[in-house]
Image (cartoon, rainbow, N blue to C red; front, side):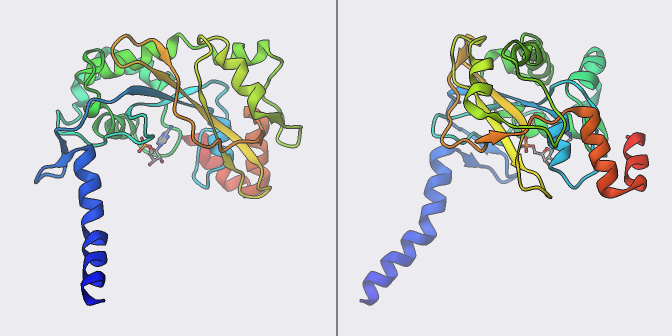
Length: 258
Ligand code: AMP
């Protein structure tokens, strides 16, 4: 009995370490070394009014455009490597990319744009082994160029899907998904939703679109379980009004400052 208990205890202690080794190895500085080449790149795109509607933080909810969250190397099992050993973020390398990043890769929460870009580069960009994404400048350029080819608002509109007031009806997730997938060779996307804090409704916050890391062709995303169901596609201006009525004028004044 004691032997069995000992074996069980050993398995519990050793399992996380074995799992870590299968996806990579940490060095003394805690960055990931020698990890497997990712199977695909996820382009994570945000819908700011939805992100803000479901967040407690001050947030730019009035944007009427999709924005970039990041480009994330990923494995078919569903997870991806993170914080790989590589160059730290260099502000000086942003250079000519800055105006584009400031509109398309916006910081929605208080804090500098650079700290968000730094986080995305150091957590995900350093793990993109694909030649197209290698190095900070290529990572940001390539991600911007993939994003530029997506015309998500028009694609949704073409299928009769438009952002609406928060008290207006819902869309069903499959039609939302199909409206986008038909423009990307029928490849599977993941739509992301979060529960609104007050109404506990499913609110659309963004999409994941996936690419082959070498050819950059669209590929299927791994979708284990959708977080959406019937979803609210929140319109920008109205969402801000809702926030103002919820949190009072003080918050809305602060929000206008960011
Ligand atoms: P990640 O670790 O790449 O999944 O990104 C999650 C982190 O990025 C969290 O700390 C979020 O609060 C932050 N984040 C996500 N989107 C944005 C955004 N648009 N602006 C600023 N921070 C963000």
